[in-house]
Image (cartoon, rainbow, N blue to C red):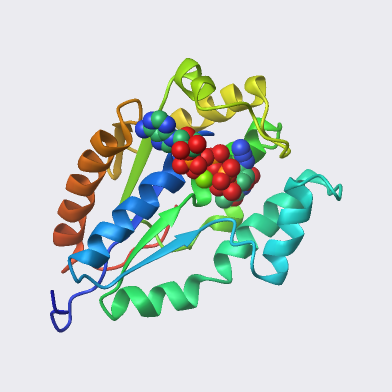
Length: 212
Ligand code: Z5A
Ligand code: MG
């Protein structure tokens, strides 16, 4: 698995509600692509390692209170601060698998009552993913995967609002829904198939910008 000159990497985002298995599937996918000798990187948003990410972390852990608009802009800034690095990596042939992106940004803030149009604006112009794999699980299945944690948004009625927002944001031109209800290996097989197709299809396509 060597890098073919001039071909770019793909930007693939996994989205979905709480406990749908995004982080589990992102790790498994990246592990397999690395084993195959592909150039690939795993990223997640929020990236809690940067100064902005640390502010987000304090908010999610409920150690600080912030205005909803402020939090929204911090999540967006946390993506913007990664854009230069992501662009360079994609152009040099690295595929990036991303655990949550701007869709989570809009879905969670709009579920709190902010206007969807307002919520989209700060993320307009971010790199547009080549594919969003939207993992779905029923609330019953999600409940079998353990209790809600103690972070801010981990409550059932709120998660249902978030789900509805994801359905509203879903763009069939580049989103694909994947059932997250099978075993980890079954879900992985489907995601691997779609991701490798996307990598192949994106090689010669230009990088686009989100919501423009
Ligand atoms: N947020 C926001 O408001 N604005 C933004 O712009 C962004 C995010 C980017 C933290 O995100 C919060 O930030 C989040 C949205 C908000 N709030 N909430 N809720 P995060 O990404 O750090 O959230 P997380 O808590 O790490 O992820 P998650 O959504 O809760 O879980 P997941 O990654 O989808 O699932 P998982 O960790 O892979 O799996 C959950 C459990 O299920 C685990 O025990 C697994 O072993 C098990 N599992 C996974 N797959 C299976 C299958 N197939 N069968 C059985 N069991 C399974
Ligand atoms: Mg996760």
